[in-house]
Amino acid sequence: MNFALIYELLDEMVDFGYVQTTSTDILKNFIQTEAVSSKPFSLFDLSNVGLFGAETQQSKVAPSVAASRPIMSSRGEQGGKNEIFVDVIERLSVVIGSNGVLMKSDIQGEIRIKCFLPTCSEMRIGLNEELNIGKSQLKGYSSAVRVDECRFHQAVKLDEFDTFRILKVCPSQGEQTIMQYQLCDELPCAPPFQLFPSVEKDYVNRVLIFLKLRCDLPPKSTALNVSITVPVPKGSVSMSQELSSPDQTAELQPKNKALLWEIPRFPGGAQLSALFNVML
Image 1 (cartoon, rainbow, N blue to C red):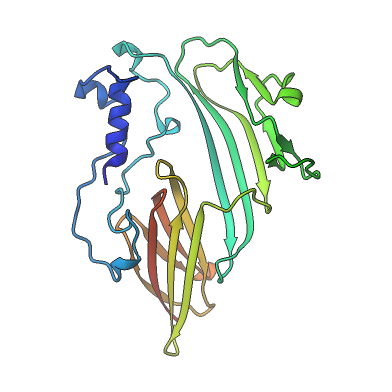
Image 2: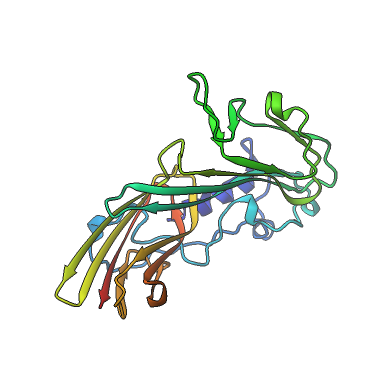
């Protein structure tokens, strides 16, 4: 339950096997994950819940990634090392049919630099040399990486990009997005989520919707702010739900003829489930 917290603590305390600090006052400035205490939780069917399903991180938990940390850190004042972070952040939007088949997809991605260095000389970022931009026909038998289109920050030098796929930039202190890219429809691999829906009509005026959602990201990765929108019949008037963890939320939106299921934090390898009882 507290794996992310422990991992983050060790990451801040130890560098290359050497203890840097054990002061709780210093560590508090850099640790953003809060401790989770185990609580008994009643669920309609525990057999459908994965390892992290019944008890997940609470809603207050912040992602332990560089992108969420404050720019001005007191680390330098404490005698720590200057640091620079490079994050790849992707927002994935997909349409999944009632049979679980992927129908439409869209990926908006960006490469973001977060620099804590007072001054930084030129930085070279090498992308995959087989990166292909545009919907042109791919040639050869290599596993090329393709994006439909991309945009660069005005400070990025592209003189080596066409030949060697190298970005050159002199990052200033703070945060900046050096590259944005987009990929639609033809994904190079399976999406990181699998949805298993089941819909039953119970009586004349009630529909039961059971959803099981699995996150296929690596265990060290976490999906944030996952939203699932499910179409409902036009005459839907009210809804009750049973969710597999207390930090999830769900609401019926009659105007949009849909129900919205929101998951603030979804660890890789976890499986969550929800049962919705929609009255017509």
